Amino acid sequence: MTLIETAKLNGVNPMAYLADVLERIVSGRTKRTELHTLLPWNWTASTPATINSQAA
Image 1 (cartoon, rainbow, N blue to C red):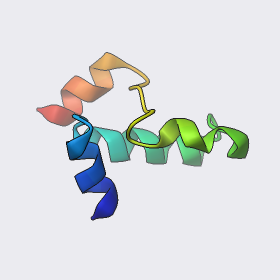
Image 2: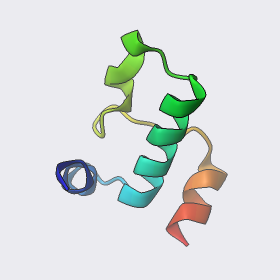
Image 3: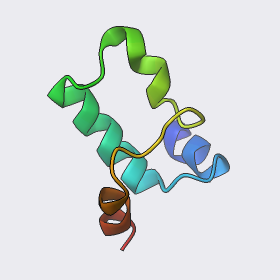
């Protein structure tokens, strides 16, 4: 719940955020040393199309 609320406070769509972050972690695209980039206030969507389809 904290991640969802933090995403909302940072103007991020929580569903798109969680889907993208989990995909990046599971796929290995984000290394352990880069996890700080996945925090809601640092996060940028990997592809705009993914965000639009998640928001719909």
